[in-house]
Image 1: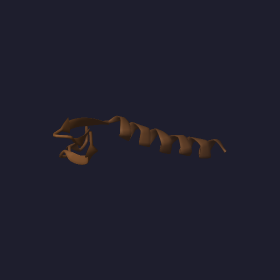
Image 2: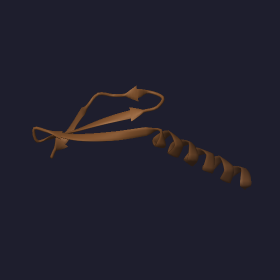
Image 3: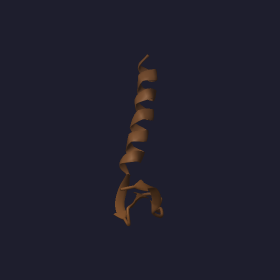
Image 4: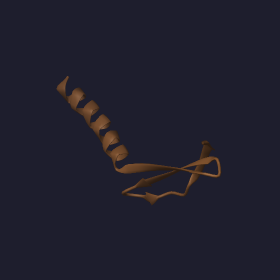
Length: 53
């Protein structure tokens, strides 16, 4: 049972670590809301239009 628990914790911790290595920025320009995601391992993506502000 402890091996199963260790495996589950490894899966959860791995995902949390990957999420923690990324940051999200938001801006509002001309009434449009944009999002940009930057990750340590992949760099930054472009600004994505996600709605209105």
